[in-house]
Amino acid sequence: FKDRGISHLCKTLRDDYDAKALVVASGGNAGLAVARAGHVLGMTVKVVVPTTTKPLMLDKIRAYGADVEIHGANFGEANS
Image (cartoon, rainbow, N blue to C red; front, top):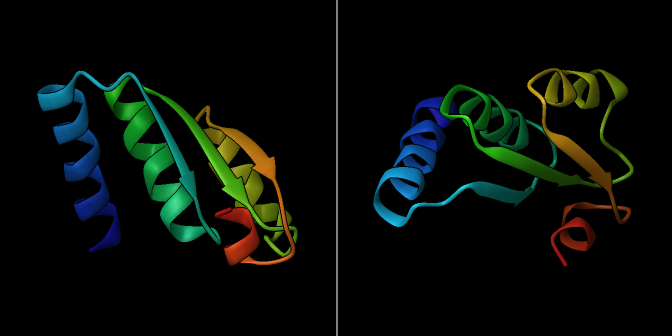
């Protein structure tokens, strides 16, 4: 469900608003979905995650070509 909704949103941003890049703060799963959607749609993606994000999730996000920035101890701090 999350992947489908995020994919639709990213496609809408690209097609209707000519967005070329996406920046998202995430604890992991949403960031992975945005990274995947951006990869499929040919968009540049940056995912900001907290220091608590597991290395495997970071690897998965990067595998879709997204840049990862680690910031803050929790989602609230990553989102600031």
